Length: 161
Image (tube, rainbow, N blue to C red; front, side, top):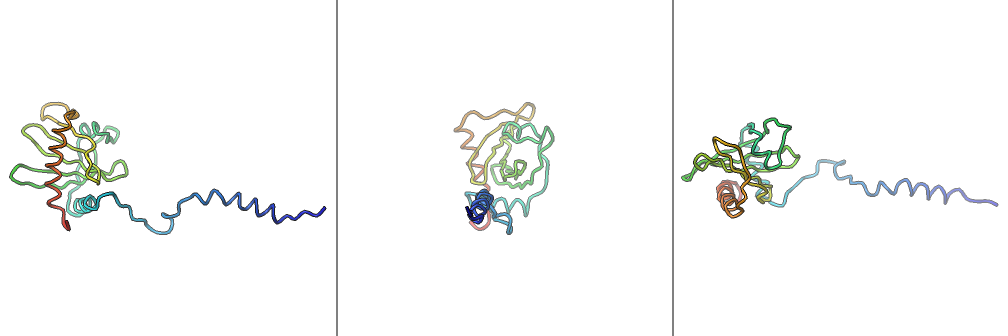
Protein backbone atom coordinates (compact mmCIF):
# COMPACT_ATOMS: atom_id res chain seq x y z
CA UNK A 1 0.00 0.00 0.00
CA UNK A 2 1.32 3.40 -0.95
CA UNK A 3 0.25 6.22 1.37
CA UNK A 4 1.07 9.81 0.57
CA UNK A 5 2.94 11.72 3.27
CA UNK A 6 1.78 15.12 1.96
CA UNK A 7 -1.75 15.14 3.53
CA UNK A 8 -0.33 14.19 6.96
CA UNK A 9 2.32 16.92 6.79
CA UNK A 10 -0.24 19.52 5.70
CA UNK A 11 -2.48 18.54 8.61
CA UNK A 12 0.45 18.71 11.05
CA UNK A 13 1.52 22.12 9.68
CA UNK A 14 -2.03 23.50 9.99
CA UNK A 15 -2.27 22.20 13.56
CA UNK A 16 0.99 23.95 14.49
CA UNK A 17 0.01 27.27 12.87
CA UNK A 18 -3.59 27.38 14.13
CA UNK A 19 -2.75 28.83 17.60
CA UNK A 20 -0.84 31.68 15.97
CA UNK A 21 -4.05 32.89 14.34
CA UNK A 22 -5.34 34.05 17.71
CA UNK A 23 -2.31 36.25 18.45
CA UNK A 24 -2.53 40.01 18.11
CA UNK A 25 0.28 41.47 16.10
CA UNK A 26 -0.81 45.12 16.22
CA UNK A 27 1.96 46.06 18.62
CA UNK A 28 4.65 44.25 16.66
CA UNK A 29 4.68 46.45 13.57
CA UNK A 30 4.77 49.96 15.01
CA UNK A 31 3.37 51.90 17.87
CA UNK A 32 -0.38 51.59 18.11
CA UNK A 33 -2.29 54.66 19.31
CA UNK A 34 -4.12 54.10 22.57
CA UNK A 35 -7.18 56.29 22.94
CA UNK A 36 -9.81 56.55 25.60
CA UNK A 37 -13.51 57.10 25.42
CA UNK A 38 -13.04 60.85 25.75
CA UNK A 39 -11.04 63.09 23.40
CA UNK A 40 -11.28 65.81 26.06
CA UNK A 41 -9.71 63.42 28.54
CA UNK A 42 -6.84 62.84 26.14
CA UNK A 43 -6.41 66.61 25.74
CA UNK A 44 -6.34 67.09 29.52
CA UNK A 45 -3.69 64.36 29.78
CA UNK A 46 -1.57 66.17 27.16
CA UNK A 47 -2.09 69.53 28.90
CA UNK A 48 -0.86 68.10 32.21
CA UNK A 49 2.06 66.30 30.56
CA UNK A 50 3.15 69.44 28.71
CA UNK A 51 2.63 72.11 31.38
CA UNK A 52 2.37 70.25 34.69
CA UNK A 53 5.05 69.61 37.28
CA UNK A 54 6.28 66.31 38.68
CA UNK A 55 5.32 65.83 42.31
CA UNK A 56 4.74 63.16 44.96
CA UNK A 57 1.44 62.59 46.78
CA UNK A 58 1.16 61.18 50.27
CA UNK A 59 -0.10 57.59 50.00
CA UNK A 60 -2.98 57.69 52.52
CA UNK A 61 -5.78 59.20 50.41
CA UNK A 62 -4.87 57.45 47.12
CA UNK A 63 -4.75 54.15 49.03
CA UNK A 64 -8.44 54.60 49.89
CA UNK A 65 -9.04 55.04 46.16
CA UNK A 66 -7.23 51.80 45.35
CA UNK A 67 -3.97 53.41 44.20
CA UNK A 68 -0.99 52.02 46.09
CA UNK A 69 2.75 52.15 45.68
CA UNK A 70 3.63 49.66 48.44
CA UNK A 71 3.24 52.33 51.14
CA UNK A 72 5.50 54.86 49.41
CA UNK A 73 4.51 58.26 48.02
CA UNK A 74 2.65 58.24 44.69
CA UNK A 75 4.45 59.86 41.73
CA UNK A 76 2.13 62.25 39.87
CA UNK A 77 2.25 65.08 37.39
CA UNK A 78 0.21 68.04 38.68
CA UNK A 79 -1.37 71.15 37.28
CA UNK A 80 -2.87 73.87 39.47
CA UNK A 81 -5.17 76.80 38.79
CA UNK A 82 -7.24 79.35 40.67
CA UNK A 83 -10.46 81.28 40.34
CA UNK A 84 -12.77 83.18 42.70
CA UNK A 85 -13.87 80.03 44.51
CA UNK A 86 -10.35 78.80 45.32
CA UNK A 87 -7.39 76.80 44.12
CA UNK A 88 -7.89 73.66 42.02
CA UNK A 89 -5.33 70.93 41.40
CA UNK A 90 -5.47 67.98 39.04
CA UNK A 91 -2.96 65.15 39.32
CA UNK A 92 -2.23 62.70 36.53
CA UNK A 93 -1.52 59.25 37.95
CA UNK A 94 -0.17 56.37 35.90
CA UNK A 95 0.73 53.87 38.62
CA UNK A 96 -1.71 51.19 37.38
CA UNK A 97 -0.47 51.54 33.77
CA UNK A 98 -3.51 53.62 32.80
CA UNK A 99 -4.01 57.36 33.03
CA UNK A 100 -6.20 58.42 35.93
CA UNK A 101 -6.96 61.85 37.34
CA UNK A 102 -7.13 62.90 40.96
CA UNK A 103 -8.97 66.21 41.24
CA UNK A 104 -8.51 68.00 44.55
CA UNK A 105 -9.24 71.26 46.26
CA UNK A 106 -9.48 72.64 49.78
CA UNK A 107 -12.73 73.44 51.51
CA UNK A 108 -11.80 75.06 54.81
CA UNK A 109 -9.47 72.64 56.58
CA UNK A 110 -10.60 69.65 54.51
CA UNK A 111 -9.05 68.49 51.26
CA UNK A 112 -11.61 66.93 48.89
CA UNK A 113 -10.16 64.44 46.39
CA UNK A 114 -11.89 62.66 43.52
CA UNK A 115 -10.46 59.83 41.44
CA UNK A 116 -11.64 59.85 37.84
CA UNK A 117 -10.77 58.12 34.60
CA UNK A 118 -10.04 59.79 31.27
CA UNK A 119 -13.71 59.51 30.33
CA UNK A 120 -14.38 61.80 33.34
CA UNK A 121 -16.25 59.20 35.35
CA UNK A 122 -15.94 59.65 39.10
CA UNK A 123 -14.60 56.41 40.55
CA UNK A 124 -14.04 57.31 44.21
CA UNK A 125 -14.09 60.35 46.49
CA UNK A 126 -12.16 60.97 49.68
CA UNK A 127 -12.14 63.74 52.27
CA UNK A 128 -8.88 64.40 54.08
CA UNK A 129 -9.06 66.69 57.13
CA UNK A 130 -5.92 68.65 57.95
CA UNK A 131 -5.70 67.11 61.43
CA UNK A 132 -7.12 63.67 60.80
CA UNK A 133 -7.21 60.59 58.65
CA UNK A 134 -8.73 60.38 55.18
CA UNK A 135 -12.13 58.77 54.74
CA UNK A 136 -14.27 57.77 51.78
CA UNK A 137 -17.15 60.13 51.01
CA UNK A 138 -20.27 58.00 51.21
CA UNK A 139 -22.77 60.75 50.29
CA UNK A 140 -22.94 60.26 46.52
CA UNK A 141 -24.84 63.50 45.86
CA UNK A 142 -22.26 65.64 47.67
CA UNK A 143 -19.37 63.82 46.00
CA UNK A 144 -20.91 64.12 42.52
CA UNK A 145 -21.68 67.83 42.96
CA UNK A 146 -18.13 68.65 44.04
CA UNK A 147 -16.65 66.44 41.32
CA UNK A 148 -18.73 68.24 38.68
CA UNK A 149 -17.60 71.63 40.03
CA UNK A 150 -13.93 70.61 39.89
CA UNK A 151 -14.36 69.00 36.48
CA UNK A 152 -16.04 72.13 35.06
CA UNK A 153 -13.07 74.21 36.22
CA UNK A 154 -10.65 72.02 34.26
CA UNK A 155 -12.85 71.55 31.19
CA UNK A 156 -12.88 75.34 30.75
CA UNK A 157 -9.08 75.31 30.60
CA UNK A 158 -8.60 72.48 28.08
CA UNK A 159 -7.40 73.95 24.76
CA UNK A 160 -9.16 73.00 21.55
CA UNK A 161 -12.65 72.49 22.94
